Image (cartoon, rainbow, N blue to C red; front, side, top):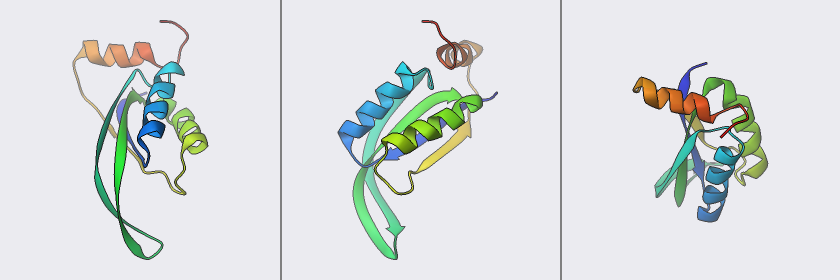
Length: 106
């Protein structure tokens, strides 16, 4: 189990807000951060421009399957953009992530 930051691109602000809250309520993530910005991408042979919201979920690698399943069920895109990186932080922050995910409790 490694602490990770997962970035999920979401094309609708309300959907990003709902996903962000659900990830925490379901204890898949200890916390999230939502930001927005202009995105350019190639899809089906064309270049597109659109505002996307990025939900960054602070979680652990053992929660990834649940996260993918949740996002797949809530996301409108054919191929949701999900990336993650391992994070290094203070022991207190890493403990917060561990305590906030995967188990029943606070």
